[in-house]
Amino acid sequence: MAELKLPDLGDNVTSAVVVGVLIKEGDTIAAGQPVLELETDKAVMEAPASEGGTVSKVLVKPGDEVKSGQVIAVLGDAASSAEKQEPKKEPERKEEKAAPAPAPAATPSAPAAAPKPPVPAAPAGQRRLIPAAPSVRRLAREMGINLLEVVGSGPAYRISENDLKRFAAGEAPAVSAPQPPSTPAPALPDFSKFGPVRREAMSGVRRATVRSMAQAWSTIPMVTHFDRADITEMEALRKRMAPRAEQRGAKVTMTAILLKIAAAALKQFPKFNASIDTATNEIIYKDYIHIGVAVDTPTGLLVPVVRDVDKKGVIALAKELGEIAAKARERKLTPEEMQGATFTISNLGGIGGTGFTPIVNWPEVAIMGVSRSSMEPVWNAEKGVFEPRNIMPFSLSYDHRLIDGADAARFCRFVAELLEDPFLLGFEG
Image (cartoon, rainbow, N blue to C red):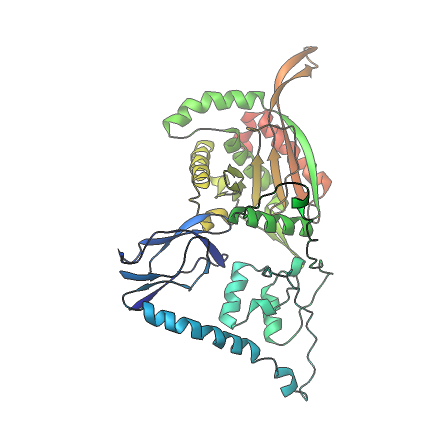
């Protein structure tokens, strides 16, 4: 008899939604065999069995939300005992939660500790999100601290390691700046009064987008700089290199070239490859260049990460980009493949548009948006004539707390110069 529990979903994944159950009662399974298909915030993954045996009872179904360590099935003859024990666990949890209530009255003569600011409440019917890095979550587990009881001192109540240490010592966090209020969204009107409506549950990808975009918009004072580049020569080079790339199983796209150019720009302007630590008033400069690439998928926008871009050639980048884009569309990306980006590129040129303002992905400080190029007449002063040139508009959104307008203009001009003269990429890249 054994209980089959859900394995650890990862430091930054607290729960997942069951989208498929791959086992049924009576099946004989082996350790490591996939038993569930789970949808996390950013990907669909398979959960393997921790041990083998005969499935006596399956305790989850599609649509259920599950957490690491939760019992998802019973192997052998343990079904009946598990069912008997399960109802008894709930009252015990309630008693444990209620027990600490009289604690303040038990220590009236103790020295008064610094008052703790109230924990921001979540809107009714919703779980409060806990803004904390995976390393902080790991430390909290090691210290036996419930993060729901901790108020972070960073932006949007983000919790740092120092906050955990202060909480363990009974001290209030040193909030250095006013925090944004946790104001629930206003109630929607009854749209059915005006006509037929239908409701559809958000996917995990869309829920993650809602959270991350709201956090970025409320945390980062963003500005967008617009520029244009003449890519006539670069596009000609890309087409000439296409057969060579195809022999190596790659398709060189403008996005692959932009990856290499962005890496050169990030080396030249390291501030764009940094992050801000408001808890310590420090700038964190990263000595590695990992670039996220926005991929349009049927389920929403995913941003897989290409690592060590500065150490790879354009053809190698094109091959890797094609592979991760395919995995993104097939929902086969792992959480690790979408973490660690220092900069992001969003290329909408294949769809259209003349410009847009992408939102910075916190904790990054900049993101580049690329729009569709088009042939335009450009005045050639030396020849005294207009010439048809392929012009590509692009934009750069940046965190104005760290990056000034002049910095953004120089960064964009550097990118434009490399796009306009492919020969320079051999020197700067």
